[in-house]
Image (cartoon, rainbow, N blue to C red; front, side, top):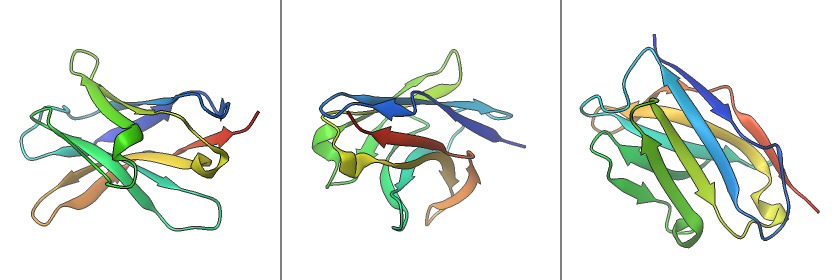
Length: 120
């Protein structure tokens, strides 16, 4: 059973960089055909895909967030990270990490989520 756990600061000041880490257990982030995603849900709104990093290390981002987003991985610790720069209060959301596989890609495992508030 794959388990994902988000970690990082719950409060970030405007203009700073939001940084979250997802620790994966029960499976490897280098497993073929797997993609490791970040998704967020602002208060009262739907889920928004931020981007993912593939088993190969390649990345893909939402066009609306691409200029501010970086996803990287640490294979030795089986973790992948999200960095979102120049945050504003509109970036306040519950942030989730999740795994995808198959074609078309489908989510199969999710973390429990991490609340991030952007406020001075």
